[in-house]
Image (cartoon, rainbow, N blue to C red):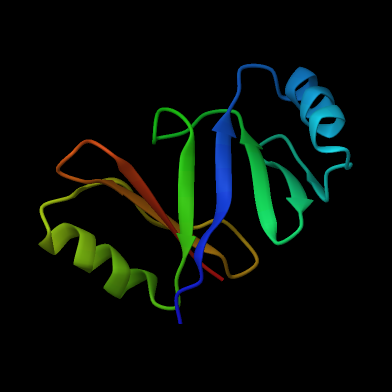
Length: 110
């Protein structure tokens, strides 16, 4: 079962400064705080800060049941991989592709 967009990642230049800003803006402290990912949970939405991103900017990620199948669906429609399926820890797989309109579509399988 696919769950729609539940994660939004913001690439930032200064993780410490951005963490303070987003904590104030969102009114919550991060649930994850590492050099490569700072995560905030607001309702059922993950807002993440990352130091660098193959997507090149803000990226929304669809939570999917089968990341291989979902990525293949994107490729079959003419999309190009911007991040191949990658295990980012704790059983979480991520991938992204640029569609034919230039939009980045992120995928997460948990």
